[in-house]
Length: 77
Image (cartoon, rainbow, N blue to C red):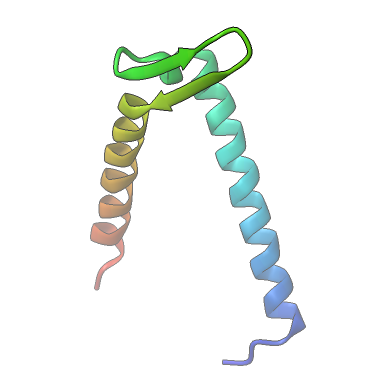
């Protein structure tokens, strides 16, 4: 397999499109309240704030695991 400039350009386009897709998904999920679940912790004072999205991270991890498992299951030969 030849990995020249054409192939590298195609991979850059795919990575860019995936980045845009993930960014849009995060924006959409933030609007519906995903990043304000009961297990997400926020601490702060007057001039600082720390946000730990524990429940959101676990939920996204489970969703991505199921999606990747389904992709693997449907594409195996």
